[in-house]
Structures are given as C-alpha cells and as structure tokens.
Image (tube, rainbow, N blue to C red; front, side, top):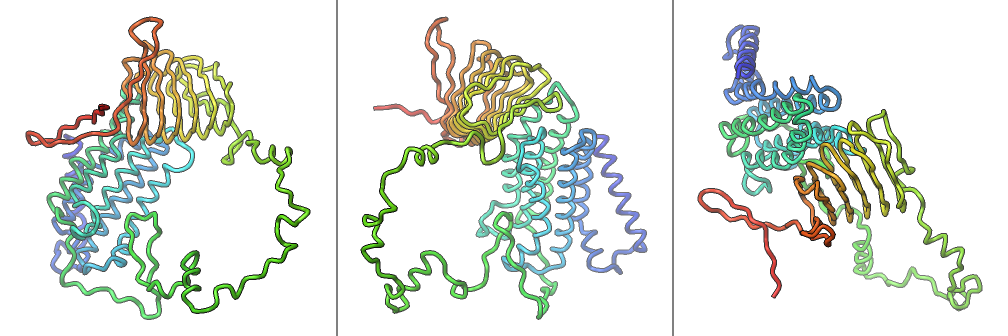
Length: 466
C-alpha cells in the first residue's frame, strides 16, 4: 500500500513540474498539452504508477529475459498512452487507417511475442505470461459491436485468462524458491486485474472516444497509400484494391483461360507412341531394391538439426532431435538439474535419478520414464506421448497436446495434473491389488457451463453408452 501511495505522489509531482515548465497554464498550451492533461490521461499515469512499478521492480531484481520482456511491456503501455492522447486530436479513421494508426502498438506487442518463439527459454512461462497478457492493450482497437472483438472490459479479462495459465506456473515453480519471481507474477496479474480493467471501465467502457472536431489528416498526393499490416498483426484490414486488377493464379487462372473463348487445347502437344511410358525402354515400372531402400530409410536426425544429448553449464540436460532411438538414458543427474526434451520422435528416454523439472516440447510418439521430479513435469505441443513416473511428481501439466498417456506410481498419486487445450489425455494408476492391472482414467476434455445463483458452474461432460 505504501509503495502505491508513493508512486501516485511521484506521478502527481511529475505532472506539477510539467505544468510549471509550461508557465502554469494549460489554456494557452497547444492541443497536445491539453490532451495530455485530460482526466483520462492523468488517470492512465496514475494506473501506471500504482501497478506497473511493482512489475518493474521485481523484473529488475530477476534480470535477464524477464527484465527484457518487462521493459517491452513498459514500452507497450507508454505507446498506448501516446495513442490515447492522439485519439483525442484525431477523427475516427476507416479500417485501413485504424490499422496504420495502431501499428506502433502492434509492433511492440509482436516484439514481446517474438521472445516466446524458437528454442524454449528457462523463463518461457514469464515470456508467455507477458506476451499473452500484452494483447489486452488491443482493447483500444474496439470500434463497435460489429468490429469482431469483445467489448474493452471483456477483452482485457479474456486476454488475461490466456496468460493466467503460464502465470500460475510461475507461482507454483517459484513458491518456495525465489520470492522475486512470485512477486513479479502477482504484480503482473494486478496490472491487468484490477488495474487496466478498472481504468477501461471508468474511462472507456465503450471503446476510445475519437475527436469530433479535429480535421482528418490528408494524405500527401505523391505518396502511395500505406500497405496493410502483415497477417500476424493483431490489427488487420482488408485491402481496398479491386480483385480484378490482380493477376489470377492457380485454379483461378485456369477458369479464366476456359472462359476467355480461346480453344482450350490449342497449347497442348500431341503425345506420340514412342513417348508413352509402356513403350519406353528406360521405364520399367519395377522398383529396384536399392532404390526402395533409399526412399524408405529414415535419417538418423531431424531436419531441424543434429541429435543432441548433453549437459549444459552443469545445470540443464538437453535432449534434441532424437529420432528412432529407444535406448536414451540420463543416469548422472541430481535434484538441481533440469531436463529439456525438444523435437524428438519415436524414441524412449529414461531419467534415472531425481531432477528438478522435466519439460517435453514438440515431441511425437515419445516415451519418457523418470523417477522423481522436485518441481514439475511439463508436456507442451506434443502428440502421442507416453510419460511414466516411477517415484513422485508434485505437478504434471499438459498444454496444447493431442494424445498423452500418463502412468503414475503409488508415490505420485497425489500429483496435481493441469491440462489446457489438450485432448485424449489418459491417466493409468495402480489397481487395488498390489500385483493387479493398471486402471485407466480418461481426463475430460468437454465441459458444460450453466448459470446458477449469479455465477457459472462448470461440470465435465459424461458419456454413457446405450
């Protein structure tokens, strides 16, 4: 509470100093100064001072990529403030103009998203939480109920729901390890809920309010219209150029040729008898053994890179691009080390010993057998994997995975299993008898949401055969 009060005081002092530099009067200032002192803009500064300061302070203590993505988030918030000031001086543009207007904010958000791509970082959950939550700033693009997005307040809440999965992982992983990470995650949530949500609710519940008196900016006569943003952009627009002016390709070109009235077969060559396959001596239709073997033999490594199984910096086991290897073993490990498995296919890995955590990323038909993990076993972006815990695992998370078999031992029955955007998740547990068969349980992937007593109640869908 004291930190928030101090932040608000510092923000107020900064505004007073700015006013004194302008001569203490706003009436004689330009339009930009008047907009900068608008109550909604001042409230945005208060929101930044009250909530973002905690995120920034924790990010500085953590450093590294967490600090980097925190600075990008600060850039996005400052850019939104600049856009809110400009909106008060600009008439509402058309769709293409809006996309160009919001382009600076979109570039900063894409910059945060780019940090989550490529090789998985040790702070992947921090990067995903920051990147996914930054899409909440896109509420500024709301133009009405027909614009294809939720209303501003709902958009902020929905964006945070996407990020909360990764934010909760941070809280679980660092609960007893590093309070700075826990503080960063808690502060990030409060930045959006209630921070940004309450700000939008108080000042822009129906979207940004464009100027009704400002003149629309006229484009320079010699300069061509700006191109639409790339497809990856959060703010997209349809191209205004007519489709008839574009050269047709693919099947469209074929139909255009047919409808042109020209003879369809005019450009075709006649096939003579000596050109037919059955009459050619160099084509036999029998595939030789050596040719067949060369076609069907699979490479020993992935196109993404050579296979790898090594300990890096004494802290992280890396297993990458292993294909068709059934005898992979990590036996020299300890509880301070982590295991990261990436891009493997049709292989089996045994981790013999206790490790801190295991992450399985973008693997297909992969089998992992491990003894104990201190923190969690994570399965992300996988297909058809099997994971067996022979000891204990406090947390198992499955994210964006299709087809996963989990084999739990008696010591791991207390594990907390979290699933998101996944299907066909089956958990096999020991039976009642010591030597009995494993009992399979399918985790639900469909849910029913009903509104009762002022809130939604969620229950899994139960299927029964007739």
